[in-house]
Amino acid sequence: MRSITGRLVVLVIACLLAGQASAARLAEGRAGAKATLMHDGAARHYVVRAPRGLAPGQAKVPLVLVLHGGGGDAENAEKMTGFTEMAMREGFVVAYPEGSGRRDDGLLTWNAGHCCGHAMRRRIDDVGFIRALIDKLAQDYPIDSRRIYATGMSNGAMMTHRLGIELSDRLAAIAPVVGAVFGDEPRPRHPVSAIMLNGRLDRSVPYQGGPPGGRFSRAWDGQPVRPALDQATLWANADDCSAAPEHDVQGPVARWQYRCPEGRAVVRYLIDDNGHAWPGGRRGSLMGDAPSASVDATRLIWSFFRAHPKPPH
Image (cartoon, rainbow, N blue to C red; front, top):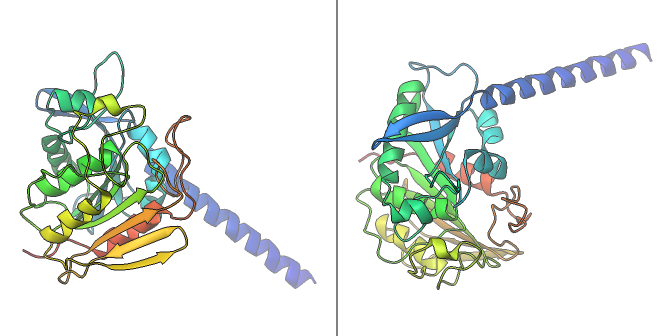
């Protein structure tokens, strides 16, 4: 009996120590306030989270950029997606850049072309900002240049598409969530793998296409979005994939996967019980849609990113 009790005590202590170690790694990842990067004459802000002990010259690690939605910020994106916890477990750097806005309203947006708000109207060079941020993070951390990824929600998803197109020389893969394209995007110069998630209940960025909806429809320039399928078509064409994807359905989750050359992939998801929200994450705001529990978008996206480094040119 004493030996069994002793083993139980040792097991409990081991579990406590493991929990403390995990908490310490997470605390390390959350340490630090917003950083500032001057770009195009303006102070741009971002938050970066990195596992303990990373330094230039060590083994290279992936970088994931997570873009908030219109009206959000770095803190909102971090809490909504849970990407910091994933980065601490998996050993990669995650950065949460912030868009721009007027000082009196604090509503930060990205210039995704036809959307949104201040950034769109002022034609803010967000692509240039993100390129400069990648360069800065590569100086500060041992970033693997073949494993740089971008994801984002809503306006951030639209910006993710734009980054994939205009930074196709830098990004290995992208993951727009509840986003869209507008139909006038140029063809990327280099292949970029893409995974896209949309919600059937989404009224802000309707999956079937059409004019914008939701509380922030005036933040757009009025250009209707294309159906969600067109996102996948854009990237399937860019990556020289098959025209007809394989289709399967599991409960409320429909999945389309294209046959692509080795090292490239294009996958699209439509989630029946998801609206304008990050599936499997936290609600973006008190008035935002409740996320679906059918898909863990962060886990799904990281699994896709991990499997798709940048193909050699």
